[in-house]
Length: 272
Image (cartoon, rainbow, N blue to C red; front, side):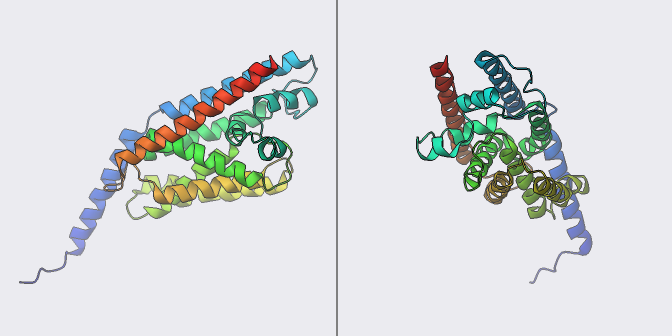
């Protein structure tokens, strides 16, 4: 006996229940102060303040790195000691940790503030969707992709978490488009097409501001987008992925961050 196809009402009810489940899963996962996002924001701010103190120790100067004045000699020296992305040091001296350490450094207070606002906003969304382990791996992987892409450019010195932030942006776009049929309307306004205008706006800004590292931004954007195509998430049924994958993502990302911070500390200790 052949089964009759499901009615329109049954299909509509099933889709409605799926969207309600997704919204509830997202609501449960969403935290006002997500731990990994907050740890990254606080850590990056503390590193910047420590770099400021080191620049003070290098010499007394009138213009402070909290202002928009960037890359004057003393501040540039402090950034180099902390691990700014510099092609010669990476390719010739094999200081590969600079590909990640530069993500934790910023040129001035405005640069820091803008990136931390973006990291907190996008980080809350992505950490709710992907969970702590996958989110940290996404941040690290996108940052490395941004640094690798930036090496193809002409910048002699580069810093900033923009590559990682663009990676979160790319992951949010992919998540929204990939699961557009499962997402309820409130989440569709946030992810996918809701984020695409921000991508184009930031690209437009980058093309009109000479100091912005567009290659780094694009590398992070595509790195985050590609990773989001492969990773599981916490809010869509049957898309959670394997717990073992989460474990090694956390192990690799924590290991890379720990190694990077250790090398930064060794560089600072050598100077002191």
